[in-house]
Image (cartoon, rainbow, N blue to C red; front, side):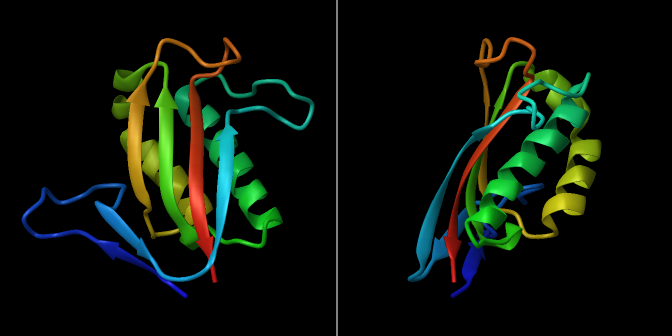
Length: 132
């Protein structure tokens, strides 16, 4: 089973996401929101790039423990306490994505929020994967 990424030419060219992802039959994994918590339950990383790296790493750890791979992510939602800061660091965040998850992008959304559960958290990622 593979995921088909759909990016119609009638829509703006996506950068760092896919407009749609079609999943065939497979096992679905729902991944809980992950922030920049380390193994001791402490938020690590002083900026949005460092926190995104930790949060995405945490999400991918849960995915791998479920038998999945980064290219099997169908959706990803990013919750941000400062959208402008995230956008200002987009190139660095994209580099982190490619380093940790590769060149495949899921259907994604970024949502600005007032705060996260842990006051120090700047970013949280939550996703769904479809395994072969």
